Image 1 (cartoon, rainbow, N blue to C red):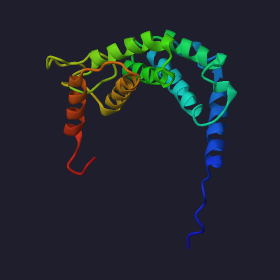
Image 2 (cartoon, rainbow, N blue to C red; image 1 turned 120 degrees about the horizontal axis):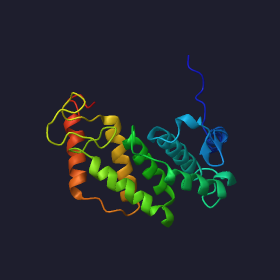
Image 3 (cartoon, one colour; image 1 turned 135 degrees about the vertical axis):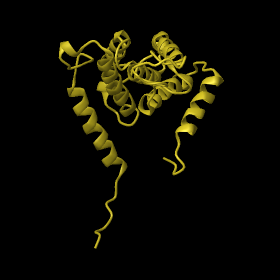
Image 4 (cartoon, one colour; image 1 turned 30 degrees about the vertical axis):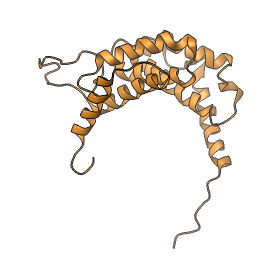
Length: 194
């Protein structure tokens, strides 16, 4: 016999978010993720930094915590450091898309050049509405990495989210992009809806 349903309150949700913020902030030192220097700088690290900053910025919209105040020193240093990080080798699609998503949360004027650079890269890297890890894509049906039409839907999802975040803060995205993305996802859907 099932027991009584637990009631989840706004207060309990806020406490959970606060615990997550407390833990995540312990992973930073002066606005930088505590990662061994040998693992920095690369696109993978850039993506990690961007994802954590994005999570903290979103949490800051749900709870009050002066440490993640958008005008505070820590958030400013996180964002400035994020803009300096490289995203040119490896998991570039993830890094650029997540960085754009993070920078778009606050839509600060000082972040617009970095947002534009990431959007430009994402728009050039798309291949028939889809993405792979980087911009070395197969546009002419020439084999690359031993396969044709290289893409995967994890990268495609993140690439789309990065472009969408830029569009949400007013960046111009060609309508052809949206049509190609819609076509890609429609063609990938199975008859079962998966």
